[in-house]
Each structure stands twice: as structure tokens, then as C-alpha cells.
Image (cartoon, rainbow, N blue to C red; front, side):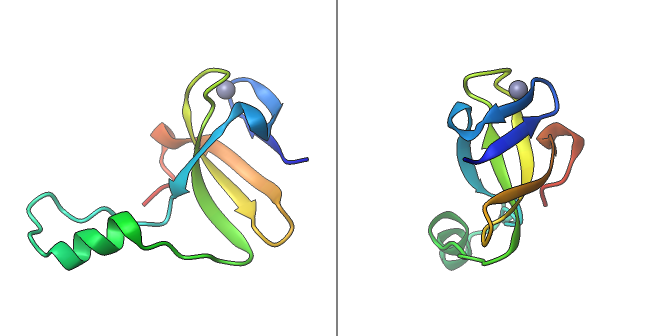
Length: 89
Ligand SMILES: [Zn+2]
């Protein structure tokens, strides 16, 4: 079973967390009027095999947002940190 080490709470079962998306995606600037660019950002997702950076929220713990580095091929976690400390794009 997938275990995630929350920097604030320690190692917990993944069921305490909520997956919140790809941490590699870059949100378009607020002024961007190109709907295609927004469509890509909101609706299109990569499905990588291997190391991947993801946002997770510890909803049944400290409620903090995390950046989790997870290998999607082995479903193992290589690292975690608070999203507020950076790590997303
Ligand atoms: Zn936590």
C-alpha cells in the first residue's frame, strides 16, 4: 500500500491524502485570452510512466498541500515537501 511521508505528520497511508494533480503543469498567465491554452491546462493531462511530481493534500491530517515525487511505474514515493516551499512549477 502506498505510504506518503507528510513533512508535518510523518508517514501515513495514502487514504489520508487527496490527489490534486500534476505539479509540472504551468498555469497560463491571468491575461491569456487564448482559450486553447486554458483548455490544455484544465482538461488535458499527461499519463507518464516513471518519476512524476504531483500535488497532494493531507485532508485527514494537517490539511497542508504537498508536492509528492512518486514513481508511477512502481507506485513508490521518492520524496515529499510542503508545496508552499516550492517544488511545483
Ligand atoms: Zn500532514
